[in-house]
Image 1 (cartoon, rainbow, N blue to C red):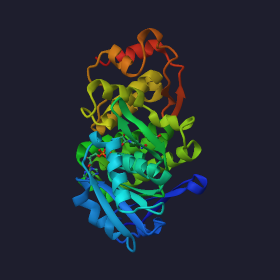
Image 2 (cartoon, rainbow, N blue to C red):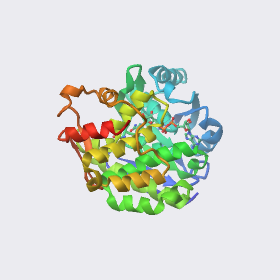
Image 3 (cartoon, rainbow, N blue to C red):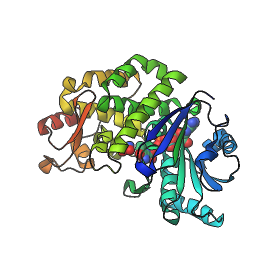
Image 4 (spheres, rainbow, N blue to C red):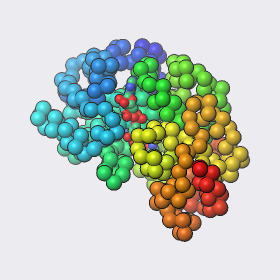
Length: 356
Ligand code: NAD
Ligand code: GLY
């Protein structure tokens, strides 16, 4: 087990640590110290179970532990799956002292957090994220939930974990495409809040793609520090937290138009960040540097061919009434984002037309 780094998400009595290290799972780390009651239910999926479940169980000495393995995939991020978890809790006699532990990517984390928010009006849970996206984004900040037939993440709750345990060594088994999709969210942090971090990413992108442990550890740590600071400032997205959605208005529209699953979320966000940088003012907002870095990370810098009218409709906007309706995260400069509905409508047309 490598040296541990710890970051606090400062939310008063709901504060919690993000613990980062390599080889934590099965490496002697005592996760039981973060479990207040006598028992836990580990929630994972069929892909993670053979890879990491035994190692995680070894980190929970002295606790009564059960596990449930979900089918793998966004398609299972549903209320039915939450019900399966709740059934398991009820059948096992779980009570308000029970802690849920999410072992997996953002899908497992979001479902488990929501089940924890619902069971007996809220029990503890711990995030053990295993994708880069989950390690730098979804496991931190307390957004939990599932999809509804009419849209993604429509059902959910804010419910903060007791701890986030990030074992960067789990990234060794992550498919390349998933790693790169996670890098889109890492690049996002540099673009919206930290120009120095962006420059560091420009110097280290090849090392990150090559899964250099030190580079990954540093990128994850900085991303978590930046996200923790924003969540501490605006836990429920009343204001500043919304800058974390940079590129997401366009990205979600791409995902909706293409059909979910065609591109990974991070890929759609990468193309969406380019569109948002163009709408922000092109090279003044760092469009050129963002584009080069995304390309070097093997991410798309243009959306797939989708008609502007379809993208607008997917953004919830009618062409005639588009002005002032949407709020975008725009860059005043690289590392300086704002949320605004004051954007250049003609430039938006150009950005959307350029998609084809
Ligand atoms: P995911 O959870 O579907 O994981 C991607 C794939 O990688 C899955 O097949 C998974 O089983 C596999 N996998 C996970 N870790 C692995 C490992 N170490 N080795 C090998 N395979 C591994 O996808 P994701 O990108 O982690 O998460 C996407 C989800 O996160 C979406 O549902 C999205 O809505 C949600 N999300 C939530 C937040 C939030 O704040 N709560 C933020 C961003 C995204
Ligand atoms: N992923 C955006 C947020 O947590 O607010």
